[in-house]
Length: 208
Image (cartoon, rainbow, N blue to C red):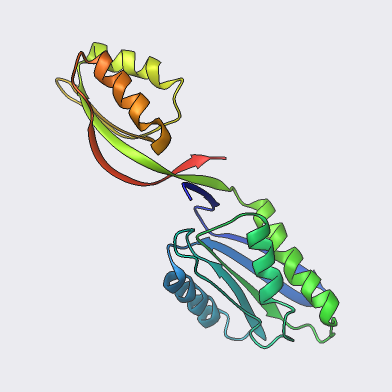
């Protein structure tokens, strides 16, 4: 998979149903281990809560995922939470719903619906970004060439990662891998034969 949707920071929402409080946290993670560590930290912080249910989805290449009802009736928490994450196409995320019991039992159906809604509402409040497998390029340019490059880049999806100004301009840019050959060729033509240096490939954030 050359691209996936995720979030870049933690988002928190609170839902109250029949005096029970459901606090949902959604955060970015790099792998399952990091997700479990995030869950453990939330559980430690809110150890007085009745339940800290969770769902974790790793990066696309890993096919890692895990969820837990954490003492709620089987299938009423972790699975609905996981369903909300996968339905929205999110990867590289950990989600924890902390429940403070209000003394009124909700029943399995309403409980599952509440956990699902809690996650859906948090996703709706979050800024979802797209990470695309990208080629990172670096090129040293004369100021005139740099001006021409800026004009060229308006028609090509890219992210400028770094720009350093001195006697010349050294710019580091990322572009989705499918644009690599085209962009490299255009820069080589613009600089009359000086091709950019390909540094590495990594997932880069592009706004949805």
